[in-house]
Length: 115
Length: 115
Image (cartoon, rainbow over all chains, first blue to last red; front, side, top):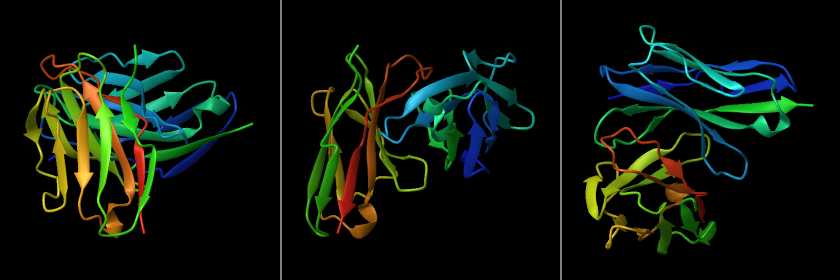
């Protein structure tokens, strides 16, 4: 079974600064996907970024980028130029490739962006 | 494109009562998931449908929870009778059916409080 661990329950960052959220996972699978989802106080879970395990290049989406270290089973999220709207719960999630398998989530990191 | 729709958004019931939640996935999405998110935790899969068939219901407490997706489109999740520990947010998600490479898109969730 796969497990996802987010070791930082809460973090805060000043507006316009950079913050990195940590995630580690455990799996015996070789083909999988990793995701970061954002859940603002309104509760709608929104996809932030996705990484295919077979790709060595780290995924980037505007101000969001990941540092994917497959051997270390580490998948951190970097948010640059933090904005007040980035305040939310951030969940790291794992999905085995093939067959529309469910997501396995970590417990989340609550990020507060401070003006 | 319309997102995943869920209703109701909030529900408060007494223990031992029954409750039902409804989900309408994104048009054309064959796979539908129900997740339970207890406060302070990441979502956990309850049941997964592909079209109108159940793919995985191993984590569904079948003595009290049931779900159906009769026409392969919208879905209903029912709890009967509810227990205090069922208080949670119930999230519905959907994805296309393309060999397990698909991102899951989430609805806004239903927050259930059992008194």
